[in-house]
Length: 114
Figure (cartoon, rainbow, N blue to C red):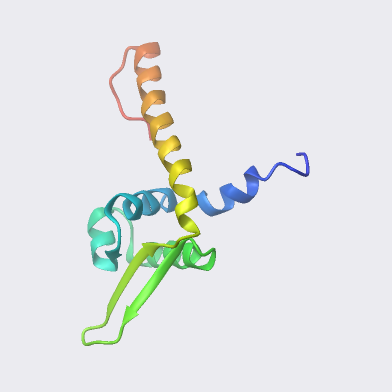
C-alpha cells in the first residue's frame, strides 16, 4: 500500500461490528448515558460496550464524563475532534442504503444485508 494511503489508519477506529453503530447512535442522539446506549444496542454485551467505548475514548473520538454522585452517572458524547468523522459515517450510511437497494434490484430480493 502506498505510504500516503491512510485508509488502514481510519479503519482501525471503525473496525468491528459495534464501533460504527455506537458512533452513529452518539451522532444522531447526542450525549447518551451508558444505559441508554445499552438500550439502543440490545444485542451488545455490557463488557463489549465498555471495551468499544474505551477504545473510542483512547482515540479521542468519544468523551466520557463522570458525575460524582450516588448512583454514579456517566455520559458519552462525540469530541470536537471526533465530529470530523460525521461526514464519513453519514456517507457510509448512505452508501449502505444504496447498496441494499442495488442488491435488491440485482437479485430481486427485499432484505437487509448484514
